[in-house]
Image 1: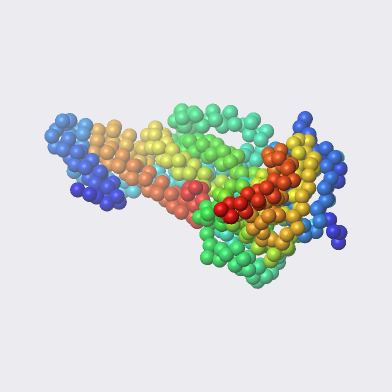
Image 2: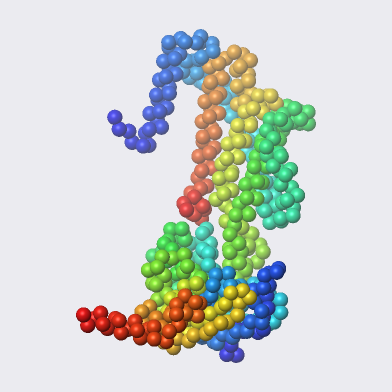
Length: 257
Length: 252
């Protein structure tokens, strides 16, 4: 078994005259949670499509040595199937009916949708649907989970709740995760490593590590600092080393009053 | 006065009948061109007793079922195929649109020349009326399937047969059911017109026969039967929309 189940090596890819990647290299470690952020249209989703072998690079090498599942940006549950039937898609490779049933029930319990097993996706809320999407991708014995802006269609509070939900599911079912997102808070709150991509042709312009167990609080200082660093890297905030400590002293001033 | 919503249509119907009774009682028009409800009811039982009414209904329903059935079993596969093959679609679409825009009644002379008088020309006309709209609706439904469903199918190892039966068909089902309802209504309109000219039995022929015999009471009676059966046909097809796995297509 190698320790880097997902590797992109010196990859170049272009669509017609638009060059998306030029000599991009990236390796994901087993069990790592990596978030990829960057300006919209920079090729974040394309990177996932390379990992999943949906797209072939023009040059370079993409290695994916383990079983992989993807959660898409758009609603991808089959609307003509119930919650149970949708999740059970992830168990198709299992021969034994009893085993499938047992795993399905465990998963329904884990995402707390037992009473919605026979509902159809259109009868669920956005957050519930997203839990089913995650369940379908996590059930069975896959190793890698690719997430393409999975929570982008949800409202702010549901998004925060789903992050905790995902963290909780990953404790039970550990996976190597690559999360593509435009939500910087989401990246900082969930990922072990955050990769910031530049505009096209995209290259890695920064990497940040957050060494903190999940689930994390959104306002944990390490998360807030990381958000600040990413925003600074993208040019939205000034990267003054003291920004955070200034902010802290202001807060303590307020509490003193 | 407040009526429950479910009784409102009955109230409207009763009011319409009262107006009908009033107009015929006031003798605005002679009885021979404006039959009274009583005359129509009388004519209805006359037709029922002679057995002609039932024969006509059976003849018309048989033709519609055959012609429409043929159109469904050929039109949907053709639509599926064209929906999945872009080049063939561009090649055939103008022709299909042409025939869809052409009133099927324009085929009546040829239908009689080719198939004579009886079931065959009518079945042909109904087929021509339903086939092209069904093909077009199926093409549109296939084109509307979000591509992400096919990616999911690929991710979870569907075979190409499974993609057809477990993705494409259920994904187009709601739109196709709507098209079936519309097209069945069209077929029912066409059968009456076709039978007037190319029939020797059937509800359309009964209307024509009543007109030739100056029996306006029987004509109205035929009209009512045609309308009621049309509603019933739609109600039957409407039941398809209650299948749980197609509800999503109507509820969001």
